Length: 217
Image (cartoon, rainbow, N blue to C red; front, side, top):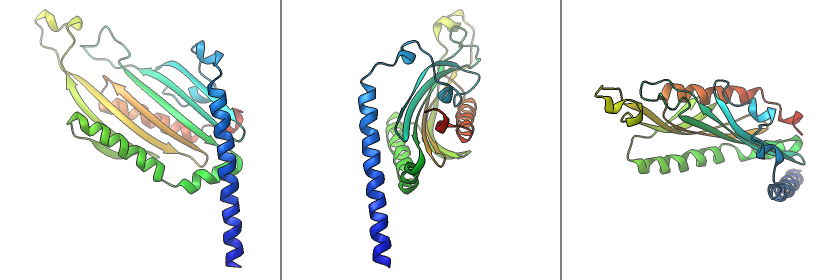
């Protein structure tokens, strides 16, 4: 009985892996076809719904292939600072999502947290090259790794006037989150406070819980 169950499970895993390979092949062929929507700088609603509402969307795309889907999007974020008068949106958040529909959702479940942990470890290793302290922490339903630092006020924004202006905060961040059928990676980089950077990523993680990729086919 045990051997029969094991064989059945192995066949199911093999079937899912085959379906995943076929879907991946579909993504690769579709990736060779230029996206008209992307060329126009538009963003599909299912991707736009994930992005922070206070930013300016810079584009996005979503490509379904059989029971799966892949998408990406980017948004520039505002940050008010006396040294950033010439740049109202000095930070960019970008994300990538993978949707596992129907039976394929089981494949996502079987992957566990290994892929997410590896993603964060890779980012942490990259960030450590900056020689700045790297922090990893939970954020809502996801996890993030990041580092922060300060830079001098740009000359064009008042530094040459002889006025002492505050330094500008900078953040570089990578995060991961998932639902039962969607895996998301997010990156944020630019001149913005750490608190606002975390708030933007937290908003994305919250939006992910309400996403309906099953309706975006």
